Length: 49
Image 1 (cartoon, one colour):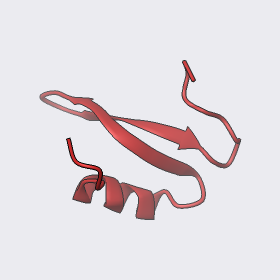
Image 2: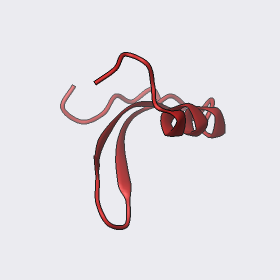
Image 3: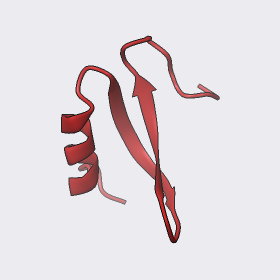
């Protein structure tokens, strides 16, 4: 895996700016992609951190 974010993560971060920060892709399937994100607006870290 590379240190640079994917194009999708870059676009998501731009669209969600000020609310969430996408950290990484967790997985993908036939109908969705799941990402790990920080909730900036409410200052919450992902579960488990």
